[in-house]
Image (cartoon, rainbow, N blue to C red; front, top):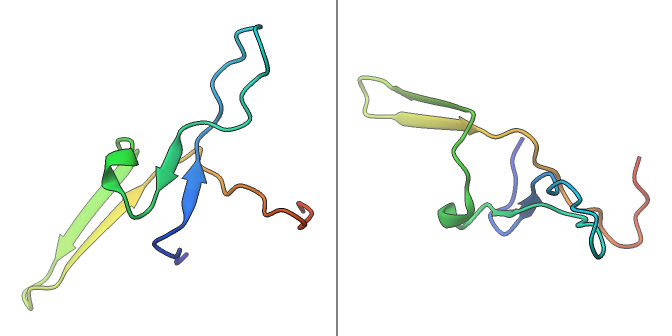
Length: 73
């Protein structure tokens, strides 16, 4: 899946403490800002003889916030 670099994803909200309003979203994960990234659950790096390097990282538990005006499916 390709995602635009200005996209934000959100983690699972923390457990409700019983006080005030429960949180709707967890920690923000900005694609363009590696400082907001958690440690990936899976990471793979490959390179070949032509100096091409590919890095794949996988995070779970992230989701897109629903767009206003669009129903969830």
